[in-house]
Length: 342
Image 1 (cartoon, one colour):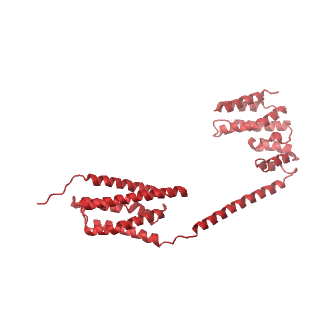
Image 2: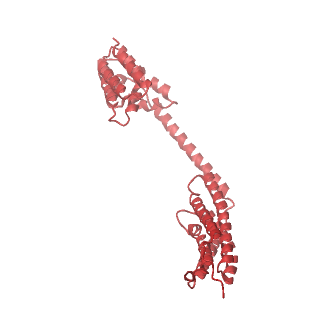
Image 3: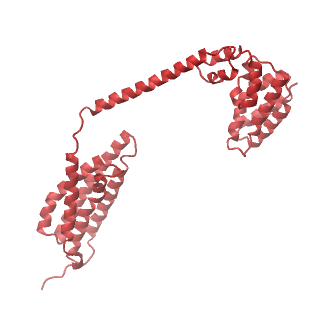
């Protein structure tokens, strides 16, 4: 009378299966993330994927060996695995190298191939205990899928175009050409700016000089040009009505007079800027700090007997209401002192 098979939980096999599944998950996740960084980061991810992939297939071989020793694995299946496991490892290495998250055969191999020998090992280990796990064709189907994925990936990997030996030199040439194009575009832009500035003169509108005040190559000469513009007085008043005050921080240097029209235009522009210092505006702190650039203009206007008490009071009140630093609180005090200057 034969001894019935033991039906206890195979602890060793279960532990090895758990380790194998963990390595499977880590390898798949690492390969999937190996194309999401720069060249150095991707190379490091591929190296980690190769290491975890090697450990995964070692664990799979151990799992199959345990299944053969304690389960029901036929002689034909054993010999088939002798061929399929090396082929699967080779195919897996090729799939890691050719992996493209957008699709193709490599992701199918990376995600699906290790599952087949794992399922086969589970089937072989437990089929002796439960006859219901032994439907006809189960082993043959799993091994056939392994063969299709493995040899298919190998055929694709070795059947593709051979590596181009001149590829590194071609990339270097392309990069050099790109840098040369960018340098030429920058030179052309600078030449256009220089030509545009050269066309400016005393008869030019003051507004045409403003872009050059923010360019270090032209700033000093642009200021000198503004000071000689024939219509600078009327142009400055018009700009105060049309442009944001932040663009006119050098007004005090433009060789214009603090006339009644200038005073009125500046007061209105400053009041508009002060009204933006309100928590209803998302940039209220920037609006407050931007007003600091107006101190030279404010001192010049106040020195020209321009009454800015109303706008200064509004700015000081609004800044105190939103101030989050000593810098802004001190600025509000400075505005209050300017308000009292006679």
